[in-house]
Image (cartoon, rainbow, N blue to C red; front, side, top):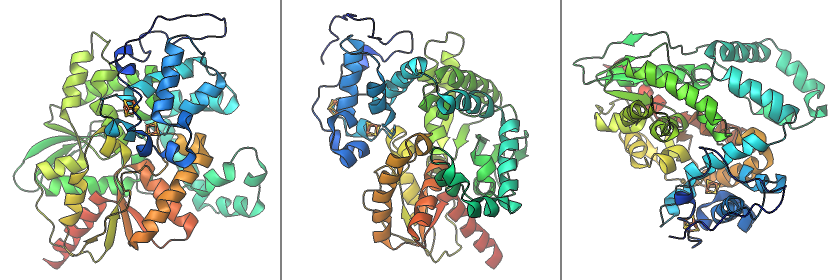
Length: 445
Ligand code: SF4
Ligand code: SF4
């Protein structure tokens, strides 16, 4: 392993990494520039540019760390274009923990970015005020639901008003999914298991998912209770902090993590189940996030040890395979935060194959990112759509009726991809399909 050279701060423009959250040198200098990660990286594959590859981004981190270059706007752009899919981490033979390096780097970037109106005031309001406060977020989503249902959306779309506004507001509005009236709320409720209790499971409700995927969250509860789990939805829980981490706001992410640690450990559950891959990845890494927090580091690791992605938990229980028949052709897109960060790839496929009637069709390059990822579809819209186009061409080849996935960001992105391409394919969660199969079973009993 290479070691870090002496730092030279030779110009007033040079801004070195600083503080406890700076990228860890022992991790940074594990990279030996072999390039095995290049073809795994969606931004490198799309552009062919070294600076848009994991190796290039790490070289920039090293250059900043050594004081050879500063954290300039152009340097930041190469890091901003990283989707944080962590496919490079899986491909790397030297064990470079790219996820923690880019997370630390984005924190350094966030501290130095000159805030504009969108990435300053609005982003700060959304990240520091809205996401941590479920009540406020619920009001905003409620307003959007009213906008969709009242007919105002049709009027606005017809008027072409959004197209005349700066940025890509019209495209973002077009990708907004239809918001259901059924929402999922964390009220401290406890759902009893069917039959003998196999485990007590505390369920992460999340921030956006219970508001945009309420029916799907209720399906998760039904599948768990159907398989002997007592499910508790602690009221004191908050957003997991994944989106804040993605944009480098580690202080807010840590505040949220501490509140979740207090809330979930008080439940004395066997497992903490997470139905969103991005949130599961964040919570499994609370130990790392709070490594310098004397009061919380041990409890953070304790919590992380209890976190299970919903698919790995269901397979481990194990579930009773449903008997209801679903006549669907289904393909599966790996969510990066499930496959690359949590290394869970087989459990979702195993669950799909356990449903009678489902024809499972492997998706070519299922392990390649769909272009979602934190706020990426908003902040790097053009590139996100390029990556999505590549994904949808692969999806088209499968001729499936349903594309299953494991993360709300991926679900929305794939739904939008199908809509854009006019493809007759529906994006769904595997737990939704399991729930439907169990429903059919009880209808025919
Ligand atoms: S996280 Fe994904 S997009 Fe970023 S460098 Fe690694 S492979 Fe490329
Ligand atoms: S990140 Fe890993 S695979 Fe990529 S260049 Fe560095 S050592 Fe090689």
